[in-house]
Length: 149
Image 1 (spheres, one colour):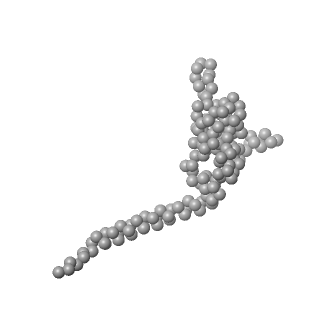
Image 2 (cartoon, helix red, strand yellow):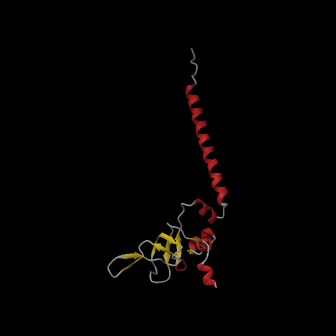
Image 3 (cartoon, rainbow, N blue to C red):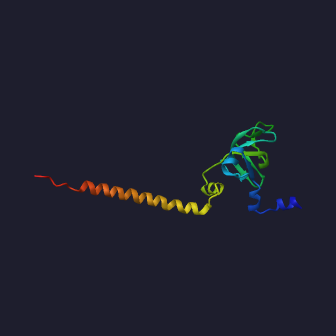
């Protein structure tokens, strides 16, 4: 019954199954035990044929229920090489891809959406401060000081 539920799982449910545990350092930093894997994360294989291999995640596949890691390949009889999908239960995340701001806010315990909205007004305020300081400089330069005769 459980295997059938996993096999017929929705895309959202199946994608949560592609999470992996964090390394001890990342656990202390983020106070989380596991996180969903995305491309660009650095991982270490802890079980299986490729035990001890470090590398970046190049592909995440729901269909194959695993991930591809840079440098993890097998040889065919004819000499070609092909990528190996490794199950996420056999890896530990050692480095996080921080390109996704929503994901990082969620990891750090912030509200994912409110942080993005707040960052835009800060930039606008900084730009307006810069513009006002430039205007003041220009007005100071334009002032002509009266000469004492």
